[in-house]
Image 1 (cartoon, rainbow, N blue to C red):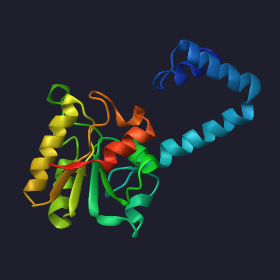
Image 2 (image 1 turned 90 degrees about the vertical axis):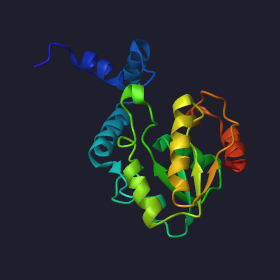
Image 3 (image 1 turned 45 degrees about the vertical axis):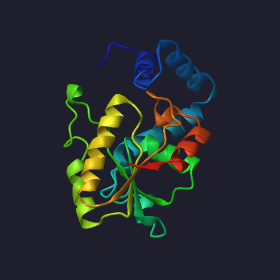
Image 4 (image 1 turned 180 degrees about the horizontal axis):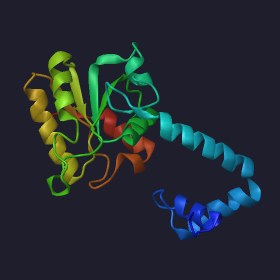
Length: 198
């Protein structure tokens, strides 16, 4: 049995979220306990279900509660376009900011040898199979414009060239060192619409 009170355990549990420090955790916990217990119970139920049921799409590696995500299952999406992104948050950003109707492949990171992240950790073998078996007409590289993102883009470019796939890179309207997840929608839309051949 824990020596911490339930309130202390709740405060500590809330701190697992990014950007939530002791004060923010306290504010959230007290709000739920004092003003919105129904909301707290609903949050706990949905959070438990999400943690147990959400996994990765077997096709694109995006988050989904099904074997295949809604984007990959949608036959109206353009299979000749394949957009490579670093994270599920990048998929959400592109979907919300653009009219893109192609498919995705989610790397779940970027090449970073210093952090031990190489091609295997990014699922690049799966991507290579996809490029070989179902080559798209165009591969859009939408990695972040960081040093690691650019290195990843270069690696992806070489992979696509082996299969004579047209390659484009989203334009750099996003500031160097920036993240898609934290960029405003109009900047993402402009950068995506202005992508250029590599």
